Image (cartoon, rainbow, N blue to C red; front, side, top):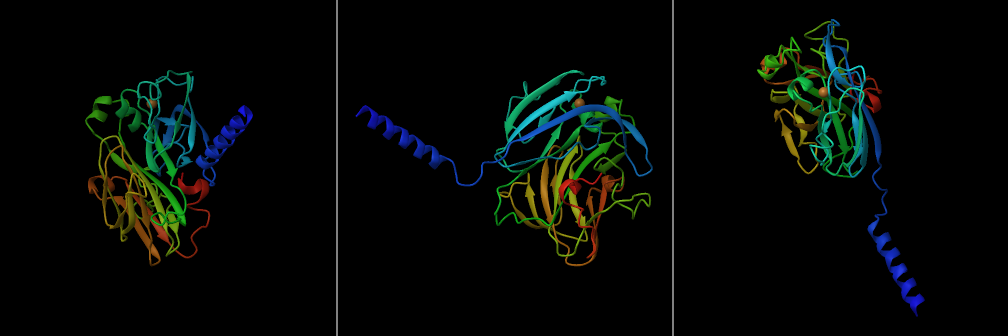
Length: 313
Ligand SMILES: [Cu+2]
């Protein structure tokens, strides 16, 4: 009798467990390691460098990507050759600011884990003091939390691009000037007119797509201070998703304000060949460097806007 009760309970338990695990695959976990590196980076098409503070040696840092519900097993290394403490702040994480996001000294390593519960596009950055300086010097990137598939409000994109807006400061050691917002340029992905051969013939890259393709732009405003008025000149955002969450959906947007520390996802379709110029329509910003040309043509390079080429270096 006891045995029957036991096996019955066991069977019930197994049934309950089976019922709780959906037939669909569980979201994958990802291992992410970022190394804080204080190193020169190129800030314009002429090859000018500044002594940046970076994640993994580039501005912006690497694209971090995980499925909604997935676990991020994160490791931060502060390179022993650095002079400053650094930290990480993932806007996609819900943790303890005094623990996971606390700075570590050169030569130290820290690990933590979080579950990416909210889908969308999120900023990550160093939060070590002075935070404005650490961001202005280049310690930022994007974490994309891909929403669950087969969502009619979030159709599959043909191409994807990452654009991160930030401010460049003429003297990155001058914390007072950074705190006063005395920037010289506002840029996308760390470089002045990086994707704009129209205004800077030295620019060698543009974003590309075919007419009719669904182009998805993951946009982050790293700041540290300026708001962005994100607009595709000669286009209209088909859909805009504040924070990149498919539950937040806006249609037919011309310009959307994305504040410092915020992010949004934008869908763009060009019905015609030619180009759009993606800008912050705050023109004191755009005309100093925040313009990205996207060229629409039937022979658009099929490798662009896919895989590792969503953040064009
Ligand atoms: Cu830092």
